[in-house]
Length: 348
Image 1 (cartoon, rainbow, N blue to C red):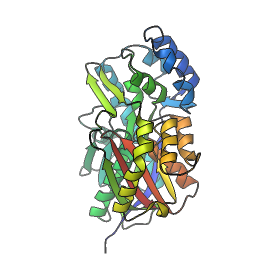
Image 2 (cartoon, one colour):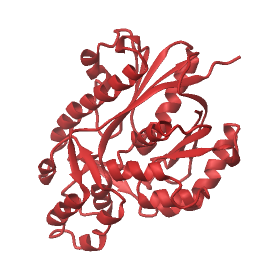
Image 3 (cartoon, rainbow, N blue to C red):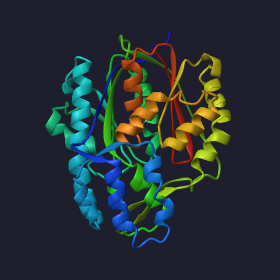
Image 4 (tube, rainbow, N blue to C red):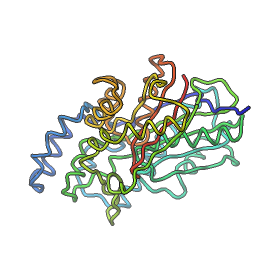
């Protein structure tokens, strides 16, 4: 008889600087308008994202200047470690545990490069044990929260009784580029926020949800849909404008195949918990899954309050779903670079 992994707790954390979306649009027009002839055509996206506020690790004025990769990296190392400690500390406290109880740390982040990785930099601040196992994961992008839970659950199941801490940290705003006159950069400027989320998992223990399955689907020849360009100034975002259309047309068959691998059908799912990549992506997912317009209400709320924070965002949605006493078979899902749909099923 196998012992499944259970989610003991989760917590979310946001950095201190809050931006009103209207002000972001005003400043973007000032910064990009005179240099980018297509800016006015793209400007409505600042109103149509469904975002009211976003949080960032730096005050708005910091983003008004061109920044080098070393400058961005310095901010990433400080801000990401702070958010890591905030989210991890809250999650452990809610589970009734301390950092010394953690056996394995899975760290998911794709918005900066840190070697030593973030959990190593946080060890002195949080007093993790010297023998804790470290599993840093890079490159999953928006799918990182779901894939991270999947990986953490597998590690917990492999060693029943061990405590696995997952922390997803993304500082997406550091990818804001004043030198890139592209539609992808404008979309990123309109969407991205910073945040972190942490989950504590353990097999052979009571918890708030049981992880019942994992699956992924990667579409062939889709590398150019989402990702990073890398140049001397840092990361530059790759966004294909057809992502919502692609999701509407292709997501359901991929989801049905993923559910089948987890022993489920669409009828078995009581609530999909989705990464809210943007307002149009949410609408596309509702249409593709035949959920009905407005069904993904918590996704819209998180997007409105925090913007797209990449990997942690879906955990923000899960936190609201569990706080609302949502019960039954939940399926977490997110689309990320690859182009990949990552899924985790859980019984709450």
